[in-house]
Length: 286
Image 1 (spheres, rainbow, N blue to C red):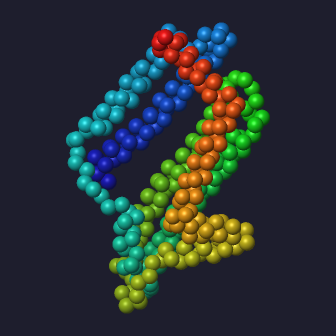
Image 2: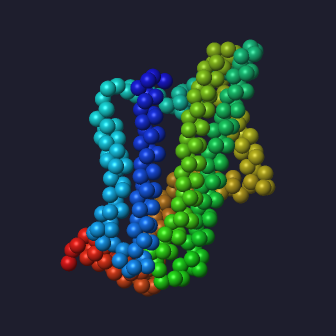
Image 3: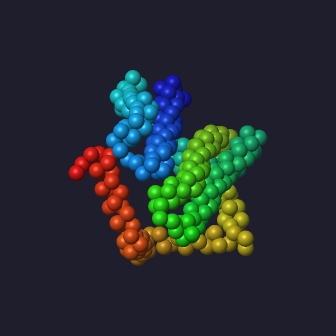
């Protein structure tokens, strides 16, 4: 990796983490504004909001400067680079089925381990996301969490409960992406070794098929059978127009139901009152 690529990678990681940190700081300041003025009854005034947000002036300035710096940074010309996954697709059909040299056996073993690691990393990430979604859904459907009259406090409580799960899912997805990138590069290097040291007369076959076959065999066991059936069902129905329209219709129906429920339980009135308070107390309209 060239110095320019390393610099851009480190810069993108820094900018992503710094953006998340500033976002968390804004949420904390918003919660501080609410809880500090809750007892006095004076919450969103121009003076209070200005004073609290002033503490974020320097981080926000640095964030804007970092974004501008990244947009106008033309010191290095980065050439389009083929992704490891694209290179793998090109090399898979060239890998010999057999080879007599020891280098071929070692490369084949390393290739299979890397392919397995990629599959496992995404399975772990999907499992974490599924657990987080189930826990979040259980919290949202539990009406005991939303029985009070302090809607803002309940929303803050919900965010304190849901955001950590969201952060864990996000971290798992990023980790799986990074792990897949590392092991994809390893697969590329081992595939090249197998192409060089393999027996050209033995025919070609992707070693990854063995890993996929082994994974399918594991999913066909009774303990994991429901996963394989669910994946197969979704895969077969995914490209059907009726399935896509059914999903859209279900999402639209859910949105309408929640809007109606919000109107019935007085949520629209609460939102209107909060909007009026913000305009008259904070911004100064009216």
